[in-house]
Image (cartoon, rainbow, N blue to C red; front, side, top):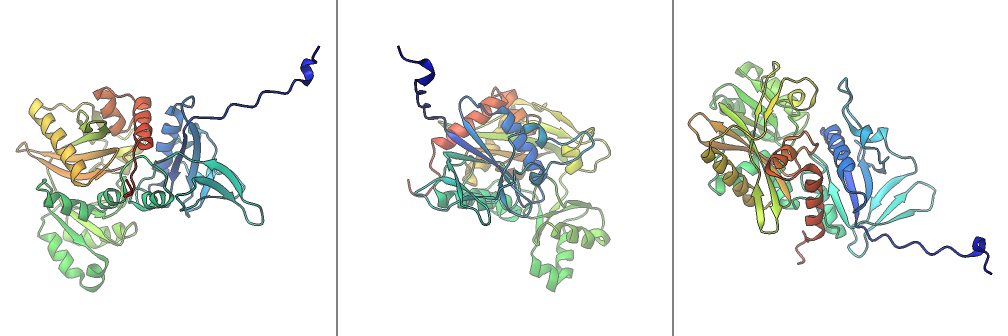
Amino acid sequence: MNDVNHIPAAPAAPDTRPRVAVVFGGRSSEHAISCVTAGSVLAAIDRAKYDVLPLGITQDGRWALVADAAERLAIGPSGDLPDVEGIAEPGGSVVLAADPTQREITVVAQGEVAKLLGEVDVVFPLLHGPYGEDGTIQGLLELAGVPYVGSGVLASAVSMDKEYMKRVFEGFGLPVGPYVTIRPRDWERDPQTSRDAVAALGFPVFVKPARAGSSMGITKVHRIEDLDAAVEEARTHDPKVIVEGMLRGREIECGVLEFEDGPRASLPAEIRVGGGHEFYDFAAKYLPDNGTELDVPAKLTGAETGEAQRLAVAAFEALSCEGLARVDFFLLEDGSYVINEVNTMPGFTPVSMYPQMWKATGVDYPALVDRLVQAALGRTNSLLR
């Protein structure tokens, strides 16, 4: 009789689940918001269906393995913001080689032998702002031959740059508001010409970094005397600045999601800013008890809803977006829409506008995450079709 204690164990079945690397954090001023977004996705992604590898990018640009702990990536009750350094595991930096013949993730530590962590099937880049949402990580992933969620290099880069985004919309005949671009050399060599161009817009105006998000570095300026300080504040986030004329109207947003038959628009939503905020700034967006109210769906007529959805898809296609995007509008008093901007990786917590709009349209948060990952697994973003 065989001794059961000496029967060799059967070899473990290979893990056939697709491996999803959730990448977040990053070098931009939106580091903390990226962490919050990642915490929500990590909590929702189906672990029975996917093997999940969380990877954080610190504010100095180091890639690190991080604790798979969604609860540590939330904004604290007193407004404390999460940071990748706080959950990074010791033991070196993570490296993804720009080599399409392999998809190995490697951990490299000084004086130690590199450790292989295996291949990645798809990357979910939950990065907001420069060095992530702007086409840079998309370019790295293209070089590495790794599929990823969301738009490619061109759409990501153009959508991040508010000037060129508006120029594309103008070329496609889509409505945008009045604006002035202040490039670094403009401001350094002849600031008065920039001041005169801004004054021609009329006050108030909004002074913004051209390539940033989450309302970082934005100032509402009511008089010319305050313009220089607002420009310098924006330039701490981006040397190129865009100044937008005031548009009086309702703030409407619409989500776009790619389906098998093409992009579709969600029901629109409306933002109503309160709590003493002059506009939808960082505190009004993210901090507790901010006084902001969201109507999901927005209280619009059928015609207003249909036009927002039509323009959202048109903006998505004009920029050659893929996967997902959130399109932000102003609905003016005369009933017309103006496109404010497009976000190719919008805020993605369950209480963020994009997931809320799709929930109201019939796609809940876990299903939304799953659809995006499945779409990325089935799509080649590369030029090499």
